[in-house]
Image (cartoon, rainbow, N blue to C red):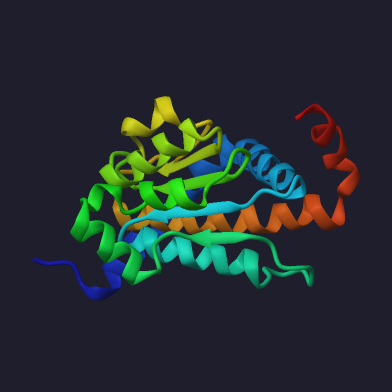
Length: 205
């Protein structure tokens, strides 16, 4: 007999809670460390770029909006750019070159040393995200990979890996946006609420 709709809701919610709790039990300090690293770069005048496909593309523009507009704190806009939103750029590169290069060429054009690229791929192996991260490394940018249980091809090319302990794409994405919200929350914390906490990192970077 097939599951009822209510059973599906309860089971998905339970699975999501278990993965979320497991992730934050192990990686809360990593979330703090990555947020601080991004705050340092922003304080030094750099910017944060995002790339990903499908639902992860939506997360990219969501998080860029939280930086440019605001998250919770009233503060000046912060430079965040989603490389997933300009259809003319995406279709021109996809048509003239390949879909694998749609983010890479934007990193070439918009990225600078010291900037941060956050590449989101639940598999860890999306070719266009991997190409963009490789280009970011070539440009001496900070690379952050957000993925699932397997870091895939991201591992050797990312300075920081956010690996959600699940193979369920939907649940991975749910934890990704929770982590992304915390990035925004903690960036505000370091830049505007606890500046003294950031000062030692500014001098050591």
